[in-house]
Image (cartoon, rainbow, N blue to C red; front, side, top):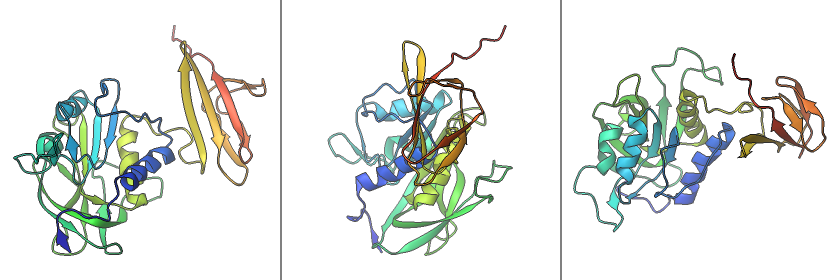
Length: 280
């Protein structure tokens, strides 16, 4: 192992790993620049956020302060927009909201794995795999964390840092406030999905077809009307319960919430959703 950065880590690969987890969970995702207004987002996922431009750190902290969730990863908060290192412990200006300090950063060649055990102590129910914890094969980068208020969600299982934090969750405003998650290593896809699902679940943002293999829901709005695209990427027929009532604009038939939709491979349902009823 070596100290510091790792040429085998590719930014697109890390970002796509988190995007795959969001897609698998059926979340509606916007890809926005770092200058974007974040005030309308409940969840911001920003892995490998090495460079912090302008007031980005303050705006991310504001997301958490108003009750939202921030999810970021190793190497984040290391430099400013001129690539100058911040004159403070990593993760730099994000340290306060994340509630951790990075004490050391180790790197490894591809194929070197450190098992990370993930367990959320707030959960009193089993996750969708029928387990209350998951062991993820982490690789490439292993940051050694010192919690400064953050809860430990995942711990390393090997090397000299066995038993130390690998994934943390900070709630700077207490139980009723927002959350800031930090993933200090490159988890495998199952591990990334485990973390992402818990972040989304807190806000009710896991999609209605999250547990249907290869079924995608994309929602667009125009003039106050919601249009839902239900797409099957499966190679076999799939049955799902309709998430809403409305009219399938491709066939003209009326669909009722909860009725079974049979989706053949490459099928698409384009649902113009009925307006939700307003309680009297």
